[in-house]
Amino acid sequence: MPVLEKNGLKVWQRRTQGESLMRWAAWLTGTAVFVYCWQQISESTTWFFVWDAPRIAEDIWSRATPPRWEYITQLGRPIWDTLNIATLGTLIALCLAVPVAFLAARNTTPSATFIRPIALLIIVSTRSINSLIWALLLIAVIGPGVLAGVVAIAIRSIGFCAKLIYEAIEEIDHTQVEAITATGASRWQVMAYGIVPQIAPAFAGVAVFRWDINIRESTVLGLVGAGGIGLQLSSSLNVLAWPQVSLILLVILAAVVLSEWVSAKVREAII
Image 1 (cartoon, helix red, strand yellow):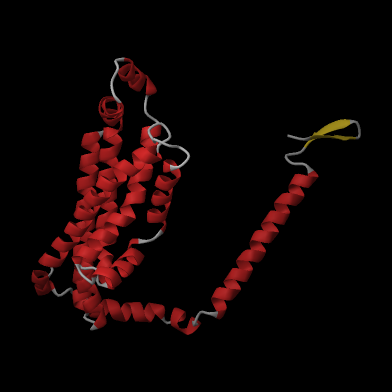
Image 2: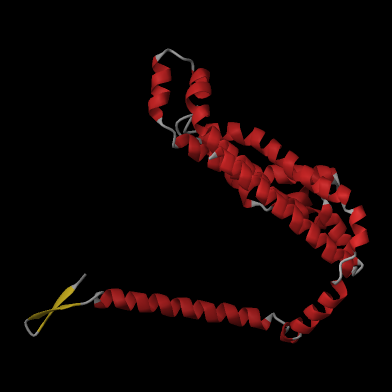
């Protein structure tokens, strides 16, 4: 903390004059940017609809209640497809993410100069694009349906799983690896008996966590034609069948809560 001389006495100040000016300049710049962005948003916003939103929301709520409970008989297959999309997509992603993670980790990659950058590029590229965008691209390639949803979820999950797994690989206890290496074990034996047992809990946690996330993401893939209960939601929204929409939302909520409970129990058992 700076101490200044004043009339022969030492005066404590939290910041120097230069630091104070820098902070004020930063606040002034941030405020100016905020005001400019708010002005741009305001110019492109129809405020009449914003002020009228409470009335519209109340009208939709009155139309959506009570839910159309008899429609639930038509939601069994869509919600099953949604669970399959999430589960199969997660399994495929894990199968692809594990080798990518070993290639990306500094202590297991065959080449830190050539192979590791490629593995990191795969991780970044698959994580940077949302599953909805992947679904739109895949629908154009392989057509609409559950398969497009499964592949979209799988591609989106590769980077997420591989990143967490390769970080777990880099954080292992190297004493165990050195002990197994000293016995004359091969590279594959070192991985099987020195690395894999150490990252197994992290792998299981990542798998369950990503499956839980994919349940949520797969519920909306149907909005772009990738199958699942989102397709029923899109159809109901298109015909303004609000009682069906409210029922579908309740089913989605129940599925997400159930997946959260399952993932919590599994993580609790792992830990």
